[in-house]
Structures are given as structure tokens and as C-alpha cells.
Amino acid sequence: MSNIEYNPKSEHAAEFIHDGEIRDTLSYAIEHRNDKALIEEILRKAEEGNGITHREAAVLIEVEDKEIVERIFHIARQIKERIYGNRIVMFAPLYLSNHCVNGCVYCPYHAQNRTIPRRKLTQDEIRREVIALQDMGHKRLALETGEHPKLSPIEYVLESIDTIYSIHHKNGAIRRVNVNIAATTIENYTRLKDAGIGTYILFEETYDRAAYEKLHPTGPKSDWAYHTEAMDRAMLGGIDDVGIGALFGLSSYRYDFVGILMHAEHLEARFGVGPHTISVPRIRPADDIDPTDFPNAVTDEVFRRIVAVLRIAVPYTGMIVSTRESQRSRELVLDVGVSQLSGGSRTSVGGYAEGIEDAEESAQFDISDNRTLDEIVGWLLDLDYVPSFCTACYREGRTGDRFMSLAKRGLIGNCCAPNALMTLAEYLEDYASPAVKLRGKQMIARQTAALPSLKVRDITMRNLEEIVKGKRDFRF
Ligand code: SF4
Ligand code: SF4
Image 1: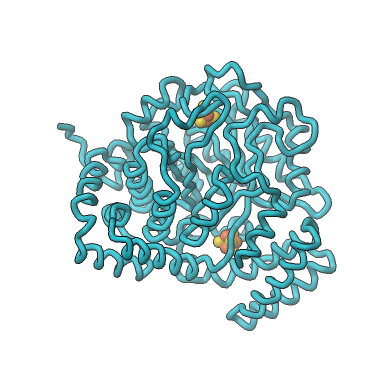
Image 2: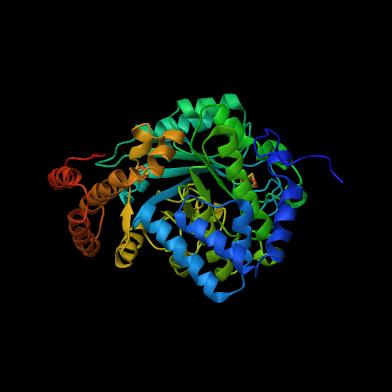
């Protein structure tokens, strides 16, 4: 019996992602999955919209009664509508390099894979990629790179961020660069912060240490504790927006679901601010990776429940799904919690610009949703969502606890809604097809008229007129 105690405030991974606490939680959840009185109490708390604990959330994941499952979806939908309205924030990944020293068995970039072409973008190629992304209409990127201290050291990442922010092609600009790079030192996190990154993103892959060690047999990433404590170092280095996630299907989804929430509770307990986002990727086929090698695959139904209960448990944390998911499964999770989507994505190194060598063959995983950004924007409008290209909070310094306190007081609604409409208007003027432009303009007219504050409505209408005349970058 281990003598490590569960302590959400601890700086040690084994104490805040405590294996015993997770296993006890899973047994508790199974034991209480038909406990009507307890479930009612949890649902009442959930309806208040201030979150529930990992234990309570675990019970909701196990509930068997179909009517209660529908109530869970209903509550998640209400919370989502209250906090996020019908806005969906858009972004795209940008792969810088697929050189990697790690041995992650589920990723084709693992060091032993000799069949995949290895690519690292030059600054000139990054410029071409960013111009292609700007020409699609993107304003927000997530940088991705394999871990290779010699070929893609932190200096390369910092230089690439500078390059990205410096490019202004026609009316285009990348206004927020989120960064998904390997766990690193406090000093390097400070350098990323100073380079002006938005969110630092790092997925835990699986919180189950034993499974993690099997899935990561070689390379620096094999150190579970160093990887799991990365967000603590990021926060100590001054980054206050961090994005966590697990790769569902690698190991037990139940374990990883509880692990994500305990990670969020830990960041809140230790730093007073939880994660800015949670990503919910599922394992996908890729070069030399067969998903049938992973018997823990998560069904659409379970996936939807995971998203809904996360929305209930951490109402103010953005939730992201990527183009790993098909149009249909994205639709299933949009209405119960997801607030950010990627669109028009390429998961290869050099996949956006024309003519970058080996770009097609260097993908990290196969994409299920292959539609263009314009098609995704049109689809979201048809579903009555407002696609948003907003990056205002980060640029106004509303990050970390400042963002959370604003969000919790509901003030974000006065910023997000008009910002979504103004950034959508920019997109429509500069990049949309005629049909999408027409639908988008109708949406903007309807939604502007519905803005609750007269003052905000007036300013928004004025700014929308200016956008049509060619002015850009308005924000609340
Ligand atoms: Fe490298 Fe990341 Fe792929 Fe692991 S998941 S092999 S660290 S690129
Ligand atoms: Fe996100 Fe802030 Fe923009 Fe709202 S105003 S969409 S929270 S960046």
C-alpha cells in the first residue's frame, strides 16, 4: 500500500493526480450510479452553474437511467448557452516540425518511425504557411511541434512566434498564437510568455501512470511526473492561460476523465485559476498507427457524455474539439459544451501553402472533417451558431484569474457577443464565399439587434459600418 496521500495543492504529480483517489472515485461512481437521492443532489448543484467535483462528475458519467442522462445533456446545454451563448471560437493548428526524440506509441512522429518524411519549416516556409492561413481567414493559431532539443529548440519556437506575429498580408493578421510544445523548464515558459503566446497547451495523453509509462517507453516524455507537473512550471513561469487534455481511447476513459478534473482542481487549488481550456481528442488512424491496437476506443455516445459532464463540472473552461472528429460527432458535442473548433486544418508540416515538399505525407493523424474553413463557417451559421474569430481577451490582458473573475461575473457576455459579431463581419468582408457572406450578414443583423446593452449595441453597429468601409480590429 502506497503512503502517498492525495493533496490537490501539492506540487508533486503523484499527490495531485493521486492514483488511489482516482480508483476510489471510480468505485464510488459505480456504487452510486443508481443512487437517485445522490444524483438529484448532484444535478441540483450542477444546475446552479458553479461546477461540481470530480467525484460528483464521475457519478454522472456512470448514470444508467436514460431520463437522467437526458437531464445531464439538458443542464450542460443550458450552462453552455448561459456562459457562451451561440458563439464558437475558430482556430487552426500550424505544425512547425515533426522531428521527435520521443517514442509515443500512438503517434507517427515517434523517433523509431522510419517511413514518415521528417520536415522542419524554415522561417520563410512559416511565412508562406501563415499567409495561406490568413488568406483562409484565421486569426488564432495553435503551434504544434515534435520534441527535438537539437532540431527545434526553444529558440526556434520563439523565432517562429515572432515571424508569425510579424506577418500582415492584405487585411490578415494572426492575433493569438497558442503553443503546444513539449513540457519544459520554468525559464523557457517565461520566454514563451515574453514572446506573447496566448495559451500554453499540453495534453496529458493519459493520467494513468502505469499506462502512460507503457505508451511512452523512450525519450524525455517518458517521465510522467515531469510531464504532469508541466502546467505548474508554466504558471510559475508567468503563463496564466494553460490548456489541458487527454487523448481519449489510449487508456481507460473513466480514469482520464477523473484525471482531467483533478488536474483542473489542482491548478485552481494551487494557483487560484483553473485551466483556460480542455481539449477532448480521440485516437485516430495515422501513418503506422492502427487505432484497433487501442482497445479502449470511446463511442460517440460516451464521448458526448464526457463533454457534457465536463461542461457541467468546469463551466468557465473553454472546450475544444479538433478536425479529428467528423462533422456528425462535432455536431453532437457542440450543443452540450464545446466552445472552440478548428477548421480547414492540416495536420502535416507545411500543409497549408502550395508546394512545400513532403507536406501531405508528414501528417500527425488523419482528419475526419476535411471541409474548408468557409464550409465550416457556413455549416455553423446553418446550425445557428456564430463563428467567432475573437482574440480580444488576450490582447486586452484579460488572462488567468482576471479572465476567470470576469467570466464568473458574466461580464464576458458583453464582450464575447459583440466581438464575435465584429470578427465574423471581418471574415465575411475579406474571405467568405458569396453564399456564406449572405447568411453571415443575416446572422449579424439578428444578433446585433438582440445585444442586451443599448450602449454596446450602438458601438457595435457603428463598428460594423466601419468594417464594411475597410477598417479592422475593433474589440471590447
Ligand atoms: Fe513526439 Fe508529440 Fe508525437 Fe510523442 S505525441 S511522438 S512527443 S510529436
Ligand atoms: Fe474569448 Fe475573450 Fe473574445 Fe470572449 S471576448 S471570445 S472570452 S477572447
